[in-house]
Figure 1: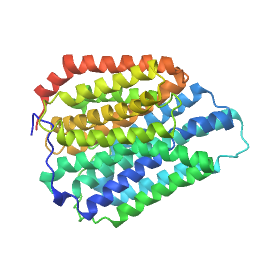
Figure 2 (figure 1 turned 180 degrees about the vertical axis):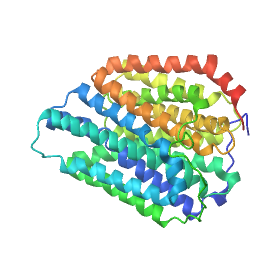
Figure 3 (figure 1 turned 120 degrees about the vertical axis):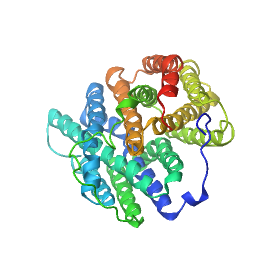
Length: 394
C-alpha cells in the first residue's frame, strides 16, 4: 500500500473503546470549533474589540497550542495516560467557562482584551495537549499494532468532520439562544468527551524510567518540517475563508463535501497515483476561491463549500499518512501530534489573517487564499512530493 491511496479496513478495529475515543475526539473538537465564528462577532459587537485585536487573540490561541506539547511524553509516562487527558479536558472546560463568567465584568476595554488573550492562550495549550494525548497515545493504544494506521486515519476523520459541524452548531446556538448558552453547550461537549473517555478501557502500562521533563517525542517530528509548513499553508487558506461572513448553510454544504471526500478515498483514489489526492485537493480549493470571487449564483454558493471541504479533506488524509510513513520506529505518536499542530495552527493563523490583517475584506481574503493555494501547489509539485519519496521510512 506504500504507493497508493489504499488504507485497509478491519472490522475488528471498530470495537467499543475505539468508538468511544473517536466520538470523544469529535466532541472535543466541536467544543472548540463552535467558538470560531461566535467569539469574533460577539467580542466586536459587545465589547468593541477591533479586528486587529481579534487577530491577536487567534494568534495567542495558536501559540498556546505549542506550549505544553513538549511535556506530553513525561506526563503520559509519569501518570496514567487516560487520567492526564481527562484532567486536561476538565481544565479546558473551566477555561472556556470563563467566557461565561467574564461576560459582564465591569472592566475597561484593555482589560477585556487582555483577559481574552489569556483565555485564548490557556484554551490553545489545554486543547493542544488533550488532543495530542488522545490522538497520539490513547487511540493508538486502543488497537492492535497492525491496525494503527487505519485507527489514525479513521479517528482523525471524526475531528475533520468537526470543521463543519462545530461552526454550524455554534452559529445555530448563538442565533437561537445567545452567547451564554453557546458557552454552556461548548462546556457540555467537553464534559461529554470526559464521559466517553471514562467509559473506555485502558490496560495498565508500566512507566518508563528516566523520562525527560521536556521532549520532542509525541510533540513535534522535526524531520517532517517541510510537510508541516505546506500543511500549515493549506489550512490557513481555509481559516482565512472562514472570516468572509459565511453562514450555517455554508458549513452544512461543507459536511456534504467531507462525506463525498470520504467516499472518493474509498472508491475513486483507492489505487490512484500517490500524488493525485493532494493535487486534486488543491485544484478544488483554488476553484472554490475563484468561484467565491467571481460568482453570486445560488447554485455556485452551494458548490463552493462542497469543493472547499472536499479539497481540504483529501489533503488532510494524504498528509496524515505522509507524516506516519515519514516517521521512524516508535514515532507514530509524534507524527500524529505534528499533523495536529500543522492543521490547528494553520487554521488559527488563517483566522488571524482574515480578521486582523485583512479585516474581513472578502476580495483581499480571496486573493490571499488563492495565492497561498497556488504557492502550495508549486511547492508540493516541484519539491515536497519528491522530498517525501526520498525520506519516507514505511
